[in-house]
Length: 581
Image 1 (tube, rainbow, N blue to C red):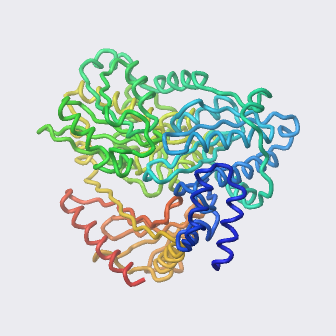
Image 2: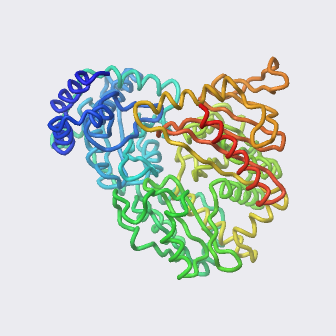
Image 3: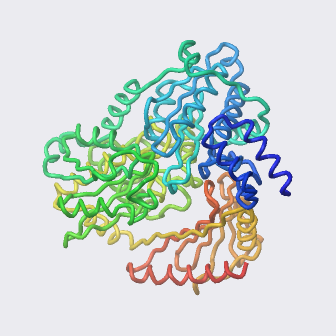
């Protein structure tokens, strides 16, 4: 795209953008003739991917702003109206919108709500920030046809995003995702209505307690041992941080109702889209939990908990025998919760017929072994909780299994069918109960984790990613995936590659017999998995929301030290290969 076309796109954007903050950014860049920045903002439209939008906040077609939100919402509305023509013709379509603490989230949420209202949808909007899992719950509770949450999850402060949901309360998947993308790309006119007119016509309804109270009740109803909680709650102290996000109101309410002492990190309790106390508001990162860990040590907390800005991810740490807090990884918590849910259901005679857990393909296989020891099946799915929700829905449709738990390594957990997304609030509640249970047995969560390792072998899971920003980044990522796909490595880190699973091509094969290929039985996705002779698994996939490629390791070894050594040698080998591409 040449400079003339970039400038033309910028001038058109200025005409269409109604919010001065974003418009003036672009006007200033034009006045300065800053072509490098203008090119980055206008070389493309911010892509409406399979889950929605995510990008840097600012003026431009390749940024998050009201203009881009309006185009996306009109496209989504158009698709829903075409998909449900009878309801559309009767004026019966409904949508619900939620948003988190990020900068401009409230502005973007109202913009989306008014677009739906202008298209005849009865639109529900929370008056203030709410967690992503509550949006999923609200879609089902209000029997809406679609829903949107404005969030960029755990991304850095300069980002915001937009997730689209279908009537089942899950993020959209095939065929809706591609249909919505097509409609977004085809938008030529955006319908508008004022907030006052939308409210007066009954097209915009503000909701809060209508959903809050049923959601809290549902979360508490999923706990297994209310008598134990009532008895032991005074003995357990929780330090919690919402990382300047949506979680404080809900986590404090639910855990408080259970009788637990919850001490919230004061510096991080208030919502703030600038996330002033952390560089990266992600509970997966140890640095993000620094203040919580310090407060936990001061208060001698039994468990430290954290949720990310939209409260769908949950992180934790517990003290070891020396009082030093140890972070529990997403895979470790997935294993602990798998164990606790299966153990408890069996003990209390609550195990359904054909029980199953669901995990993503990059999550730990330790959970499979734990589940199997209790007679529970494990089902794999693509990365992203929408795929866990899809398998959950298939269980309900076919009756082949009964869902009891779903998780992914990126700190996402779900124990309830009323929410079709990961839920940091319910994860916090169940983690509290699990902590109480093991304390009643004289054990900590770390003690139980060590018992699991003793029974099934030591598992170490880790990951790293490499970012490729800018207009050339996408081509670089394509080249890397093509190299790994077309020139399969015979070994990684000194260990022979015994099997490859190519989910884009939907095949599994051995390098020794490439002509014998088996199906993956998974939808297509740009993911490669390499299985090594020592039972280590390496997964490679471009992020669906950020310009980066992620590498995941799942390693079984006799000890942590041995696992660290294996992973280190594999990562070194991969980085050397990347330098040559």
